[in-house]
Structure formats: structure tokens, C-alpha cells
Image (cartoon, rainbow, N blue to C red; front, side, top):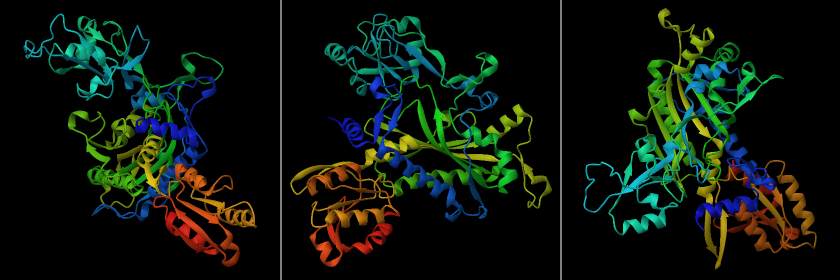
Length: 519
């Protein structure tokens, strides 16, 4: 069983993540967070809000940048006037190329299929031309998968047999292979028994469409938002008029977004319903590059501070040909998941594109007037925007992957989630050593006092070692045991999750001990 399988099993067993509507067979791309999962995800969102929004002004700013800047929050509606999405380009351009397999009935994003071929050993096609009788293979996966990695696919047996007679694998441009009808007729789809079962790519809009009101016609069409950012842009003037902010400043939002993903996969990583943690940071054009670097580096550091290893965490700057049409710069914070290196968060310099689009479409003035600017010609301007856009679900999955560990304590193998104490769903568990001699009563008293400050758990069932193991799997950083000595001197045993080291401490000092190590 690989790491991802073990993690998915633990998430179900310990109440982190369940398949949505599981008793009815589930729904692909949808997940429910269980009792521990909802606490972990809530802690991640709360850490983001406290660090990025509530206490943002405590952070050092770029050299030469104005010190007086602030952050405010919004919670915008999921349903918005559909013109918002027309102005932003989502209605006309939020499309992915999609292909279907007529035999297996599976659907794929064309840009996430890898097409490869076997090059004859005689090198007859060294020029790159594809022979008329050549067979091609399509394998699911992120673009950029190497040909050898593509062997880990439903074609393994067929390719292995052919490879004995032929030479090395070679990638074929996906667009070329799938758009050309003659080439497509020779492509084996994943799991297909014969070639030629893939359809031609066609545009597929990722937004979920719905209707508002009693009538279901074109006049009532609305969309579930595919991102939270546009709600911030259309409220820019409202925030400026009511919050008394001054550029540079930011607006943050945590909220649900929806995308009708063609091929949801990799557990909760790519889902149809997900939660975003986004900031739109407004600044002057000549300061945008400076603020872009600031947010790029700050967001990377945030993940490191909360426990993601720098060996698995990467900051990748986009090449010029990767940039979206509205962006002048973009970087991805990437994490090496068990299924490959994938994006956790994007930080983009979106220039003034979004505000200008909404100015043009709505006819409303979304410029900013700075009455403290000495140069009268520079007082009114349309701000540029730096956008750090993080996925709460992807962050949750990354922290779970990082935390999962199997080690050996006292000759016994255990599974443990080494979550940062700030993120752990349960901060402290309280146990009576045995259910007699007043230990449960004293343990319950301590538990009730601690739960006023911390998420705490009480357990008196089973052997103490088994109770420790349950909390190790749940990621609880501290366990406290009330034993016979507690009645004599008021002390308890406190056990640290990662090292399993124990020490005695006065029960009256437990709250202060935990506060120092968790907050």
C-alpha cells in the first residue's frame, strides 16, 4: 500500500475525510470533512486569517514601501449577477479542451493526457514524422509526464510486449495527436481494447450553471462562482467608501468556489467543490513588482512556518509563455505530494486588468482617489493588484501528507500525524490511568477546565497505550494522564506526541504549559 492509500485509509478511519453521500455510492469530486477534518481545515483557515488579515500590519514591509497599510475582509455571495463573469472573461474563456472515450465512457481533459509512441530501433522516424502504421498511446496525468512514467498506465502489458521489438518511448504533442482525425484513429485510450475510441477535443466551460427565480430561461441564468476574487473586485468601491482604507491595502476572503472539473482526482486535491483563501492587494503600478516579491516570499514562508518541509515545498516562477493574459508575473508554491509535484497556491501580479474590465462593463468608477498625494495629477488612479490565491483543501491535504509518519517506539510500530500544534484538531487529550480510585473524577475536572481554552478530548476506555496510539493517529500533540500520584501531590503526566517523552507537571500549570507550546 503506497503513502496515498495509507493516508486515505487513515482519513476515513479517524474521521478526517469521508466520501460525500457515501451510502448512495458517493459523487465523484466531492468530499465531506469529518469531526477531525473540519477542525484541521478550520485551524488552517484561522491561521491564514490571523496571519494574513488580522495581524498583517505587524509584518515587515518591503524597503521603501509605505508603512501604513491594512487588510480588511469580505464574505461575498456565491451567486452573483452573471454579467460579473462575462466581464471577467469566465463565460467566454473559462474553458478546458475535453475528450471522451467511446469505449470506456471516461472523460479527460485533453491537456492532461500524455500521448506517446514507440520509436523503431532503426531510427526510421528520427525526423519526428509518425509512420502511417504506427500505434500511439494516451495516458492520463499532468502534462509534462515523461514517456517512461507513462508506462504506469493501463497500457503497461501492451507497451512492454511491443518494446521488445521496438526502441524507446517518445512523446507526441497532444494537440497534434488528438486534433488530427487520422492520428486520433491510431491512439489507444486508457483502458481501451482498440485504438480510435477518443473523440475530438471540444470546449467545456467549467462553471456550474443554475437558474435564479421561478422561470428557467436565458434571463434567469446564473453561475456558482468559480473563484472568490471577482466578488472582491466588484466591491472595491464599497470597501474604499466604508473602511477608510488607503492604497496600498488588501482585501481577503475565504469561501467556497465550484468548478465542473472533467476529471477530479488525487483524493481532495482536485475537487468540484473547494474552498479558497484569497487576497487582492491593491497598490500603485510603480510599487507592484515590489509587492509581488513581498507576497510571493511571504506566502512560501507561511507554509514552512507551519511545518511543510523545504525539501518538498518549491517556489516556481512562471516563464513568460506560461503567464495568463492579464498577469505580468506569477509564481506557484508547489508541494511534492505522493502523486507528484503540484500547485498549492498561486501568487500573481494581475496588473489593473480586473478593475478596468469591470469599469468598462459596468460604467462605474472603480478608481482610487488619494487625497494625501502631493502631485495632483497622481491622486486618482486605477490600482494594480497582487493576488495570493491559496486552496484551503489543498493546504489541508499537504499538511496531512507532510504529517503522516510511521515509526517505531519501544519495539512497536505506530502511525502518527505529526501536525503542527497550531493546526492539530485536538490539542490535548486527558486520560485517567484506570477507572477507579477517583482518577476519572480528577481527569474529568482537568478536562473541563482545559476545554475552555483548547480543543480537548477525554478518553477512559482501553489500555493507556492503546489510547496513546489513537491520539497519535489523530495528530494530538499532548496527552495528559491522571494517575495514583495525582491524588498525593496534584501532579500529572504529560506526554509529547512526536518524541513520546513524558514528564510530570503540576495539574495547575498544565494550561500555561500548553499555551506556551501551542499558540
